[in-house]
Length: 339
Image (spheres, rainbow, N blue to C red):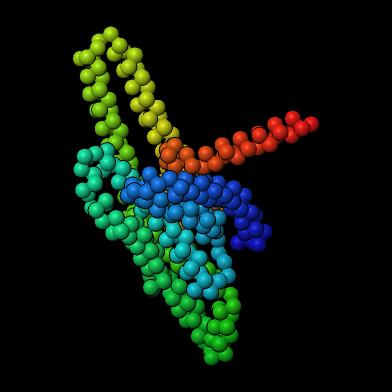
């Protein structure tokens, strides 16, 4: 890759990821402070959501570095592993936390009277460990030998083993000019297992649980409408219209969230798998960089939508902002009076 082309793509990554990363970081801090200041929210479901916000905050911090994983760099083996393993671990932990939050809320809706008896509530430390430890273990597998770095180094040594002097010079040159690439850190099998064994099943679980919740809500809506018809047949039409309108808004919000947050990431994953199967140099293209930034960034917005939709999470910050606004208005009015 030409230096000018590489510099232009790094600028593209900067302009796409830095504004989105700043929004994700500050909004997560906004919601985390709101949960921490409200003692009524200190319970197990909100602790799971707080863990999701922390994972999303870390994902927002590493968001500018994730698209750069498709670019080659001059780094040694240890720094190369850290550069690729750490963002991958944070993203997988964010995905696992997102599944856990949906699963916990799914249990509360499916069995509202017995949800506290499930293992998620009775063994909260174990449940919290399951969303952080497995991503760490899987993301660390390249550091324990599942990588292509040794294979590439052996090929270089075989090609430069004609004489002792040439082997020494090539060894010194390889130390100075080691190329850090995702192909050397993540084998194809590792990427296939992560995409097909972790990412896609997690997405399917979230979609299935969301669909099941909407189906339960629709069934409960029908039962409520039947009760209204049995009690009062004159006012049922208006109440049914209001309930159906609320349900339609809920379905529209879920569908819009799926289209905005999930579809770009699905397209990004399809492009990645297609590039691996065909061997095309797609990960270095500008289109791939744009899809990676928008796909991962839009997926990181999901906890923000869930958090801002709950007024209890934002109530303490709203009170602080309201007090500041009232003080500013009082000070401004006092200045006008003195003038």
